[in-house]
Image (cartoon, rainbow, N blue to C red; front, side, top):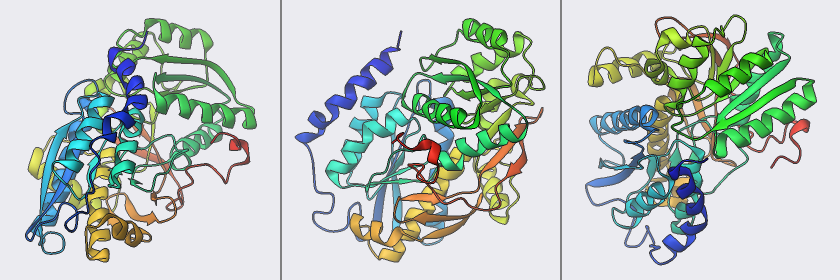
Length: 407
């Protein structure tokens, strides 16, 4: 049975056009959106409560760090950035409602926010109807583009496909798929099954549970009975805590059956407990251990603000990058006006903690280096493979014959 949040979320995808139809505003009326003579307002919208708070609170913190750094350097267009923070509460209708508030009441110049694809898809019609900008910071399943969304996390060919290629290179020929029951895992697994069919990989099982689910004995028993070469994990939020603890309790080891996760980063490892997930694999574009000059500065700045024991992670870094990329595009445009920023954004690049990151103007995604890592006993993630350089975004997988028809 789906959770109450998911039932409401599904309904919201149909109700959102009605929700916003009577309250659409023109964010550019009266000048540049979100801007006064001395200030520019920006929205920050993440789950600060509910099952996704384990992942999203730190993304908010990283985005606010980027705002603080920009202000310390003189702001944007000589104006101070003023963040307006809202809680999506792990509830997709709430994300849509808060997005509309930020646009029409707070009149922000841009919104940085979301995590789950359900939250993004709930917000998408709000931003398109208002012709406002959302900067979405988390890896996702691809097969989407919007003129009013910039995607600064990985799309499929920058995370899931490289993870599958890595498993094949390690001799893995069978998979068991485990995911949360919403858009991202189901679409990701549709892509994974198409890849598997083309490469002769056997999918031995496919299981979904609601967000926030904590009883994994049945799923774990199915994994044990199937004896796959690897598990591909698209669980999100605090369900990962229960899954990995119960998987470890069943005797499944990363040496025999590695789990590769695409939504478990350093912050989630802390919540799961490193002892429960050490040795398993993750696929991202950034780790706290990534060796770039910009990363050393990012980690030091984040810890100085939030504590020496804090960790950084890929979604945090992508949120931090989003603010910096938006600021660079606004500077290039000379205004916060949405269409001017969109036009100026193509080719904008920053030396991010993950390395050089460039906006692709055609898709409004960014070029990113793919990295596979293994979780260490201390909770940090050690890179075991990386692409030769940034991979151009291909959200519709046009460069992969096996993916034809998926979009």
